[in-house]
Amino acid sequence: MREWPVSEFINKISPKLLHGVWRLERFEQRGSDGLMMKSHPNSKGLLIYTESGAMSVSMDRQLETSDPDIERNFIRHLYYAGTYKLEGDLILHRVEIALQDQHRNQVLPRRAQLEDGNQLLILEALSIEQKVLGTIVWRLARS
Image 1 (cartoon, rainbow, N blue to C red):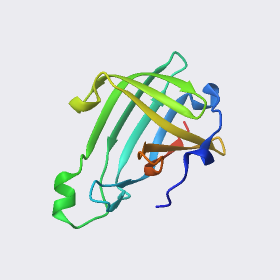
Image 2 (cartoon, rainbow, N blue to C red):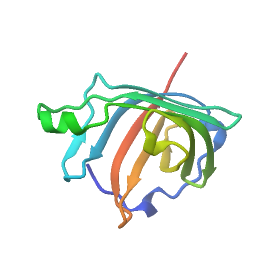
Image 3 (cartoon, one colour):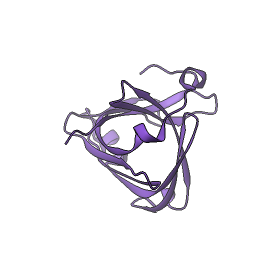
Image 4 (cartoon, one colour):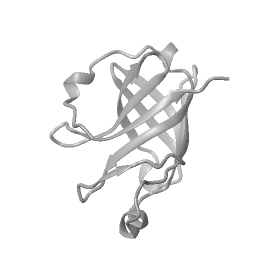
């Protein structure tokens, strides 16, 4: 996975384009040990943004790995919901309920870029050096 400097993603996302249901396409995440973890094609997820400012994310993440140590330490099921606010290219998730205790009552900033109106790239986490540690790609769900 490429590490992008934050400055490459300064854009302004229109709230109107963000509203809707997004399906997980893929993710990449760097573990604390520096190893890159990639999503298995069977991974599933939904990200929902409403016009009223509510949001919800649920993911059943599976990895492309046969290493039992990585599997054992990986959080497979991710769920949280609350409200969101847009600030330029940041989407601030204000978490009210969550499966993982560490997410509850937190504001989780997500740097984002909307591509072709149908693909949402979320730069999930930034290091102290402002380098990307993980990305999640969502595709707008069609009815």
